[in-house]
Image 1 (cartoon, one colour):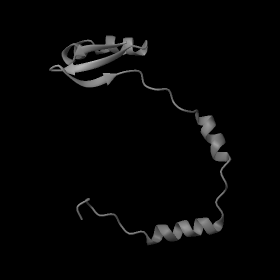
Image 2: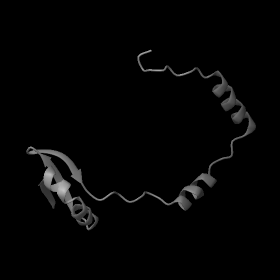
Image 3: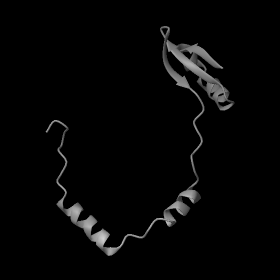
Image 4: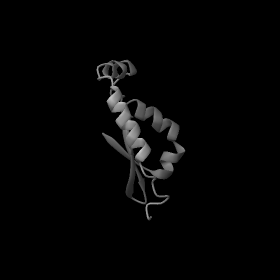
Length: 86
């Protein structure tokens, strides 16, 4: 179940809300009767560092031809514009 509370109450009780969210509750924070945000538990990480290292070990090792091509592309790459409007 999701509880609704005004933003002024959430500001005054943030520590309590954090404890309750850690226990599994969710809250919708309202400002002037309009929903502005939802507070819920952060999701757990998808994998561990050991799983990532194991996955990386299964990837093929780049050969010299690949590394030469990567260096060539890097050298010939243009510079990005200072702003998106250029």
